[in-house]
Image (cartoon, rainbow, N blue to C red):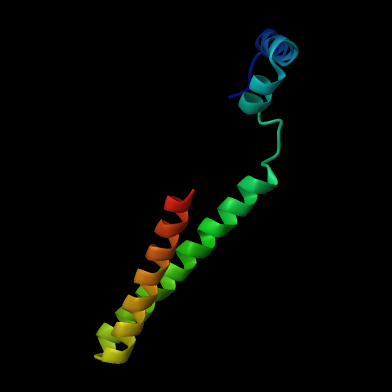
Length: 93
């Protein structure tokens, strides 16, 4: 639903005043700042952890469904190692 002209002007004025009075707050609320390199790196690291954990679970499920003990052990080891490494990194900080 589109805003009426006077509503849009009022909203623009509020945004302008907020940007003048508190630029950091305005950037947070209005989405004017791009994510930092650190945030992007953390997001990619989390995606990597989730992908590795999902791989471990997939290997585990395939091992169970095929009744292959080697794959069950391998999938369990991958999943446990990923969780242990992630936990260790978080506790170090």
